[in-house]
Image (cartoon, rainbow, N blue to C red; front, side, top):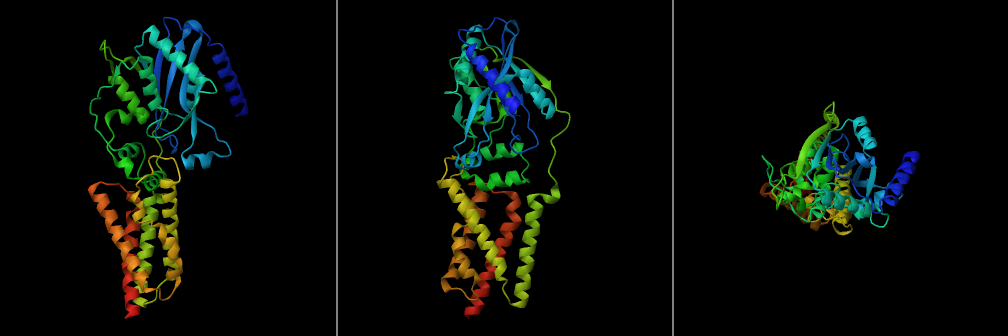
Length: 391
């Protein structure tokens, strides 16, 4: 790995140093490369890059804006929304070999650029490759390895590209776009649906769909130059076709199965409590601690980070942060009278969550549904139990 990083650094350095007044030949080609999704969460949405091929100058490289550094503060930076991504360049043969090894489809679209546009693009990328320019603040929806391909293309053509609507195109919300590449019954999808707020349930305008590489591919395919009306893409091809389909996670260990079993356990214990007229305080302590801690995490993502997609998160209606402060009351055999009103408020909050879900204010993780049902069953039981004790 260190050898690869060292050789890459030398390659980039040589490319930048040799770029002074470098002129591409008339036969140089500019291509947009789209890589299909992989098996992991990080790779689930694909990848994009720009290929510069100039056989006359023995040049065949790919520039991509999807690199990041795993330094000692990576997790903290990612959580706070302050993660810097960077532009990098590598030999196209190495790039292709890697994605063949990981068995991911690689598509190419040769752009219908003239010599001036090719040179302007190349000069821009080389300038961006300099250490002082290569880093940018990553945003999953608005500034990533795919959206920059769109922006760089517009820069190179002086905003002369018109992105026409592809055939069979259907506008979707940002969350629906994520779900289109991610099985909803996975832990990664569950984490995304809990962490991201109602702001991503807004319907994306046509060009905003291009935060996903596959939409870069489809929108470029139908794009034209505004003045000449020529097609942006001269030719399209599949350089490598994945041999196997994406592997799905084990259903037995999926969130829906786990939360269904958890919900069944909560409802069963509640039923036993009703029969025996004895409350399982340990269960209530776990539920209040769990929902309270998750609620605190959601609040931190909303107010203590730079993430734009974590705002207005109505998962707080079930993951109520104040629950963590109620642990003392939960442990008591007979809590204060106001605590009964507090539990009634939690029931109302869950009803509001259902309303938000139904009218489309925010979509919640479908795998959470059994747990939410069990939660409201437990809260209703607690209200009735405490009322009986008071009477």
